[in-house]
Length: 320
Image (cartoon, rainbow, N blue to C red; front, side, top):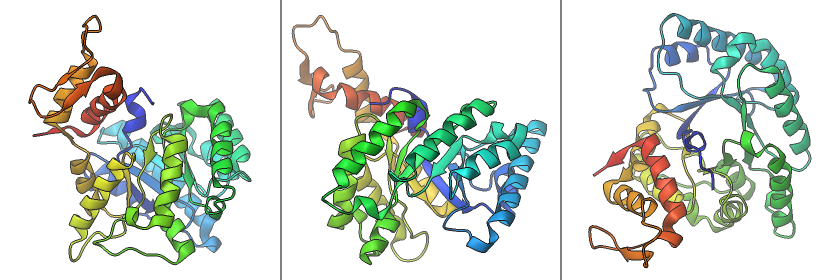
């Protein structure tokens, strides 16, 4: 299990097209609040015929954010660039220049056995060139992991490849909409993706393979307004947490506060986690009822859970 808060700190990751000309102003003036991360996308959100222009818009926005931050600091979210091919990583890293200091890393779409080596090599090269550590977040969303005959082999093969740069892998991410698309599925605002068994089974396999060694982030939720959208998001977030996900991809600022609230740690969980981690190891018993007299705490069984709870409490806060 990851034992550094950085891996739990991505939280609500707001997606935005990389060519959105107002994004720098929104970041500088904290229009999205002060508790989110930002993904600037050069892939699916950009028309294939306008990639070069989008890159230039992106570079300009990053320079603007960097320069403004030098003059008057503001909340600077973790900023990630979602590329569409491995070659963009080297090109953009060079183009950002000193402004790379405001970039946290790159998001790798449709991460597969065919492109894994190229992306990993580019991330190693980028870290050799940059003035700061750059992380990667591969997304598991390709059709290759649908085939039951090969899924597990593919997942373990990709994990083996990532093991060489494990410290650079901030999160494993899942492409819920891409996987639903292949089946022709689309959930409504009162339906959790975890009820769609073919997709949920893929998620389960990803968590099984990666969940003990990496933080895995939850899939995008499409609804941000209208009837019952917030309750639907809250329910899916609860399902995400129960199934082993941490954090979530969001597509509208309205969703950010909901994600942050649901991931707050309850006072009861926080107290139990502290008690478990502060257990007297010389005691003749490593199990007891919790202070509230409501459930059992066992040091050997709940130690990993307790460590994770304290990381989440530091990132998202505590609620009573």
